[in-house]
Every structure is written in structure tokens, then in C-alpha cells.
Image (cartoon, rainbow, N blue to C red; front, side):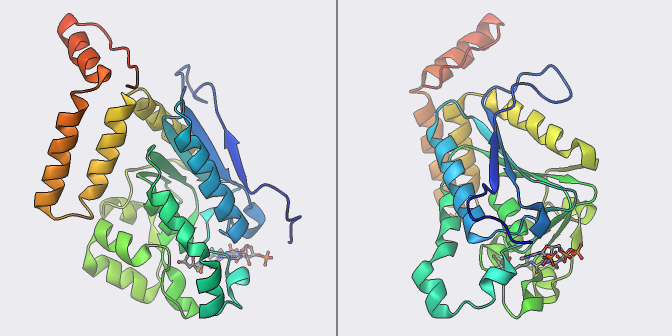
Length: 272
Ligand code: CAA
């Protein structure tokens, strides 16, 4: 089914309360890929809206954690939009350079949690892996099926799946394109936890609220440092960690966190 080009494909919500408890979820934004009739396939418009929404939230100091999920019953996202991509040429891909937008997701400083129900295939799996944590439904299915289309993953799949699961498993999944059920993804370290389908978004919002309640400078430094573990040598990664550890002692939140511990009272974070 075709859509009017001006229909928004990413919904942005700021839920005030956790859906299943009285827990405040201040500072948490929920982004929903909203193209269920195409299993939330990531066409260029959807990716543009997603990246722009993430950048807006990242620049807004009141947003402390983002949850990304997919609308509808069947999918988180079934990949890049195959119909849109089918006629591409190396020249059109190079000129448009749409896939460079994925780099912008990597530069988002606020933590992002993927809440995955149903299919997370191709670009959908790559998007989930570009997030910092994945909460998966027991019906979630991950995979990089690009080989079946005559291509390879193009938004990080060969790199992130290999880093997450190791060469032996990633190679099998990428060369065959087979699906990876949620429990297997959990066993191999791809996802943070698996919960019942109806609890996925609330579980992710609860986790996001917990992260949002932590001191934001330390959260951002921690996200960056963990990500460096994939990018740097151990020596350079340890050096990066130590410098950020020292740097946080310049923050009001470090003084507050330690003073509150000593005084046996809850800390009040200032974000500076
Ligand atoms: N792109 C465009 N449209 C898609 C799509 C995609 N990736 N995935 C699903 N759709 C569309 C289908 O064409 C269909 O539309 P119509 O109703 O207009 O025909 C609709 O979504 C529903 O899909 P199905 O009827 O196929 O649903 P199903 O339940 O029978 O099958 C599925 C579900 C197994 C996920 C199947 O849709 C599928 O295999 N999708 C493609 C998965 C894939 O190959 N993804 C990789 C894309 S390439 C990529 O992502 C490159 C990269 O690295 C960035």
C-alpha cells in the first residue's frame, strides 16, 4: 500500500508515567517506527525522520534516554526498503549517500534502547544493534538476510553482529541469511533480555527510566567508554576510561553522589 509522502513515519512520545506502574519516566522519549503496512521497512523518509528525531532529543538536555520500537503486530523493522532500493546503482547510492545517515546514529550521546517485537531483519537488525541495549520479545526474530537478495548488509551488520556474537556465529548467519530467534540471540549475547511480547515496551521504558534517573554526564561518559571497547585497543580503551573517570571528578554530580552516599540520603543530580 502506498502512503502520502507527507505522512510522518516516526512517532515521538514523551510518556509521563510507566504504563504498568506509578514509576515516573521523566526524561524518557519513545520513538515508534510507524509504517506497519510495510513491516516498518526503513525507507529514506523513515530513516531521515528517525535520525532527525534522535538528534533533536540528543540536543535537548531534558531527554536522558530514548526507546525505539516498531508499530504493529509483526515487526520492529524488516530492513531497508527493498522496493525503493531495487533500482539503485552504485552511482545513485554514492551520490545520495543515504546510508551515511547511519553514522549519525552512532554519534548520538544519549543512550538508546531498542524494544524489539517480531522481525528485526537486515537494516532492522542493524538498527537494533546500533542501539545501546536491546529488549526483545519472545517472538522477536533477528537476522541479516541480505545474502538472499544478492547483496550484503550495508548498515553495520557484518561488523556489529561479529563483534556481538563472534566470527563463527556471525559468519553462519550472514552467509546463510537464516533467522535468529530471540532466545538464541539472548544466549549469544546480542540482546539484554527477553520478555513476553506484551511487556517489551514497558520493560524498555522501565529500563530507560532507570538510566534517566542516573547522573547524565556519567551516563554519557559510560556509554562512550563502553562503545570504545569495540573500537580501540585495550590500552587505548583503558586510557580513555581513566581520563573520563578523572574528568567526572570536575562535575557537581560526583560531589553530590559521594556526599549523598556518606550522608545516607538520596542524591539530587544536577547534570553538571
Ligand atoms: N522492504 C520493503 N517492503 C517490505 C520489506 C522490506 N524490507 N519487508 C516487508 N515489506 C512489505 C512487503 O512487501 C509487503 O508489502 P505488500 O503488502 O505491499 O506486498 C508487506 O511488507 C508485508 O510483508 P510480507 O507479506 O512479506 O509479510 P510476511 O509475514 O509474509 O513475511 C518477512 C515477513 C519474512 C519479514 C518478509 O516480509 C521479508 O522477508 N521481508 C524482507 C526482509 C529482508 O530481506 N530484509 C533485508 C532488506 S535489505 C537491507 O536491510 C540492507 C541493509 O543492510 C540496510
